[in-house]
Length: 98
Image 1 (tube, rainbow, N blue to C red):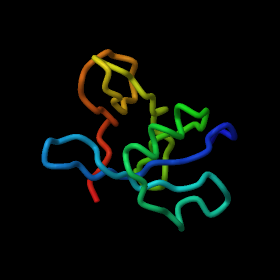
Image 2 (cartoon, rainbow, N blue to C red):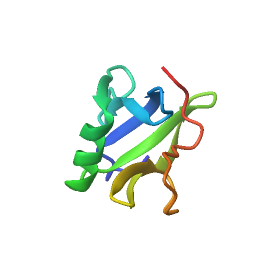
Image 3 (tube, helix red, strand yellow):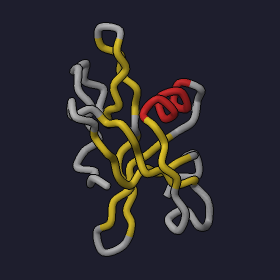
């Protein structure tokens, strides 16, 4: 897995409007999947905008690197997406809920 990654995201929690509200974030280090913290959507957005790199991670008979998470601004609102489509909706692949 890449050394340029600062954080892994392994799960999400949506609000009542189906927007991502919280993410399960793991610091990229030797024990990256043992410890996680609950980050708000805005904390992740701010960190990405300040140069931190986040990738999804998923369990498929062992943990596998997913896609880079981007902040996409549409009509003045920031969305978390693993693609660069200018769609007013969050999209982090098929990250599970927690």
